[in-house]
Length: 316
Image (tube, rainbow, N blue to C red):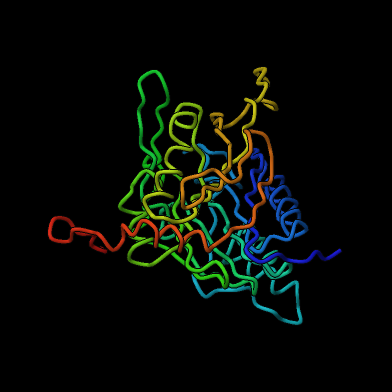
């Protein structure tokens, strides 16, 4: 049954991720359908939703991805079309392109490991309701940290950093900027999107952990929302329990377990949390009042009060 799409309704999909790519694809498909049934105009998947979040897994799950302007080819021979797409693009991107067109919705495809020119990137695809890629963001800032007594993780062991900013337009919502997880820690990156490209929404698929999550996840979202006087939306994987390894070859996990913080969230331009969830699998649905962006920017006009004689934001 086709549901009515609601203007400015968005859905954040906090899906559980397993070591089975086929299971992850089915889960994503089921949640995207739920977003459609809830009337969402735009839906967001989490960071690394088709693969375990482990540097040792990224190469195994990486796929070739389409570029901006690409869409699935329609021919009379569906089998040939599928085979041709298989040879060029992976299952994950084809799923997103197919569902975006089927449900007539924008899909911000979280991120998946991308293989290109013998490099691996952490990449977000944005698909419009025609099934066309309208944005492709490769994570700019790689998650290389070593917190004493906390967590040590180095994405640069496997991944290559992207080298550009990404934004796209949606009728009724305006320009939307994209970052991935660790990108949210860099205010200059967010300012570039809001001040140079006039983005009114920033979306950060992310997978904060149990050390950084409780300390900084909400704080950073609220900070970027107030800095940019914009909405900030984040989508995290659901938290999952470590596998019950018993030493047997058929049950032992191949990759280190990563516990995501969860708490996918929408923050208003005033810095208020307007919708969120806990760490369990969930769908966060809310309607964005875009007039709040203009109200905030008029009431506290910081973008017009910059001291360019003292400091300046330079693109590139």
